[in-house]
Every structure is written in structure tokens, then in C-alpha cells.
Image (cartoon, rainbow, N blue to C red; front, side):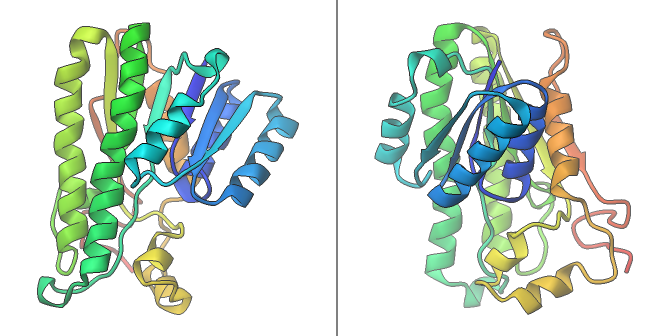
Amino acid sequence: MIALITGATSGIGKSTAIEFAKNGYDLIITGRRQDRLLDLRKDLIEKYHVNILNLCFDVRVEQDVKNAIDSIPIELRKIDILVNNAGLSAGLTGIQDGKFSHWEQMIDTNIKGLLYVTKHISAIMIQNQKGHIINLGSIAGKEVYANGNVYCATKHAVDALNKGMRIDLLPHGIKVSSINPGMVETEFSIVRFDGDEERAKKVYENIVPLKPEDIAETIYWMASRPAHVNINDLIIMPTIQANATTVLR
């Protein structure tokens, strides 16, 4: 079995790579930070004795996506699972104060990047007449909260794309699923606040958020259902969070 995981250099993507390797999957791991990809590849091969291909590219650049996927050797082209994990949030301001650079970064990564990867990998899956695409959504794709405007819009787009993929790929025997987490302690808030670690820490003060491993285990559970079972859409929250804005501290 072979899984391709985008954004595998940290957080949920890295934990998902570990979870699939632990369960005997050969992996194609992608990300923008080559040093982290190489370290992860070495670690997974040593611990789990699986085959690992690392592809360093930015999902926002369609030609780079195509070139990377075209370079996958024949023995790894029968991809069973695609985890569209690469994504981010940038900024937390009212729409009137938003930065164009933040908006473009989120739209290009969360929507266009997901589309570029899906288009090229789904073509391979259609040839194979099998596969499973798992999209990383968010509670922000189910609700809208103050100052979340464009990030919420991109995750609502992922929600719609997930439903559209499910319909369009049904005739080809390809499963499509979405997992939508609440608060997960990763680099998410550090990226959102442009590297301000002190501000990011405050997001998770006095609470027990989800861990990346929690999401990875759930993704693997979705992927390991019997052939006749598809988990269309799943929301996963920490116990202390009821919805996007109601958190017990």
C-alpha cells in the first residue's frame, strides 16, 4: 500500500506519515522544507523499514506539482491514499484590515494547491480504478468566526470541493473523505501570527487541545475502513471545545 501526504514536514502531516509508516505503508512525503523531509525519511526507514520518497515542492506552483508527480517512479505510482494536508492560516483581523499577501497565501495554498495535487493524483487513481482522497478541512469550514473571514472562506471551499470530488470520482471507484478538526496544537498559530510564538502560545493556554497524533490516528482509521465503507465527512474536536468559538478555559 502506498500513501502520498502533502505538508508532511510538521504537525498533522508529519504525524500522519508516522502513523501510515507504522502500519506498513510505503510513503511519498511532500513539503517545502527539504531538510525536514530528509530527516523524516531517514527516521521512518530506520524505525519501520518502509520505502519513502520525498518530494520537495510548493503546492501553490502548478508546474512544480506536475513535475514532482511526474517524477514518481513506476513502483510507487499505484497510490492508494492521498492525504491533502498542506494548508495554513495567515492573519486574524477584520476584513477591512486584512493583508492581500495573507489572503493570497491562504487561497493559493488551501484551495489552489489542493486542486493542483488532486488533479494530478486523481488521474493516476482513475487509471488504477481505485484510491482514497482524504482532505484536511477545519471547523472553520463549517462555521465562520470573527476575524476568520478569508481562512474560513478557504476551508468552506475545501468542504464544497470534498463533496464535489465525492460525486465526480464515484464512477471511478475512488473514495473521498474530509476530516475537520477543531483546535490542534501545531505550528498553525505560529504561522497565523507571522512567527509570533508568544501570541501563539496564548491560544492554547489553560486548555487541552487536540494533538497532531489524534488527527493522524483518525485519518488512518478512515483509510482503513472496509472497501464498501466511505467516511464522507467527520468533525473532530477536543473535549473542551463545543464549536468554533465556545471553549472551556
